[in-house]
Length: 418
Image 1 (cartoon, helix red, strand yellow):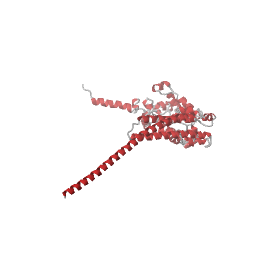
Image 2 (cartoon, one colour):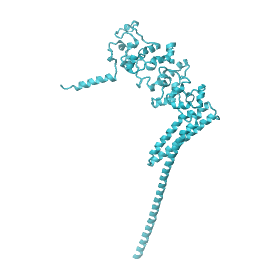
Image 3 (tube, one colour):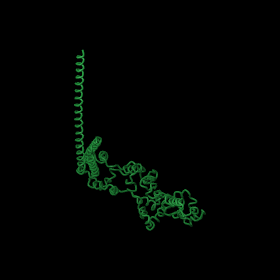
């Protein structure tokens, strides 16, 4: 008996659809499941959710009796129906599953979210103060269309997190209630972290949750900032602890990182900050400011040397010179300069010099070598020009002599004819 290939292909098609189009039809009969019959819009959203794929159904959260199409019976209090749970109930409702280790273990999901939420400002407002303007689970994750965190459409996907937080934190009326700024999202977008995350799609850049926490969201205190920023910028923190600023921080005269780099509109470390930031605390005539200017000079001079070496390398490449070794050296010089940037935090000129001196030395050697090569090219070109001029001069003289000889020959031939 020959196999029916059309039937096989049709079967494969329907099986494949069950994987890339998850549907509640795999778990219930949608025509008799009353929630799906009446709430078509929510059904469409819910069918896309991670809960639908995991077999968590409407009545698991809302209660009621989905087996009857009688509206009063399906939504009766006796059946445990909860139409729209309060924010407090939502937190515990989600926690019933998400704090259950047996239920979460197969999915590799941690079970401490509810405990973390209870310690957060959001959680304390909702659970202790019945302040339902504060965020609960659904404000961040959505209601029916709850997606995996690694789904790019999820509200908690890294590039979407700032916008999700901005739903509340850009609401001026709401933020005024808590005496909080409402332009945090706009500042974040202008800072180096926001630029890398939102414009360059670099998901290693910190989001709101990376600094404040997600379920246990809290504003970092003055003494905590170093640890929060230090998760990524450990070397800068190490050098900062060697600086005079460390003493000021311990005296609560400054917050370690944000005093110079700001909170949300975070500025990247660069030499321009030594002109603008230092003057917030130090007079231009002070020794501290002058030290900053010395450090700036070292960095600027080093960058000029590197730029000069790079320009010569590009020039040599156009002339066909093998500059592979020089390009490797230039990368070392650039690395040395990058190594010097974190040392600024120590405000120790010697530490900065350790790297800038090496970078300038490498750049100077590259420039000297390429200058010599380009000079030899120039001399050879000049010598070749002289040779060509000599050849042209000789050819011209010979041509003139030949023309003169031809003319004299013609004259002699003419005289003999007469």
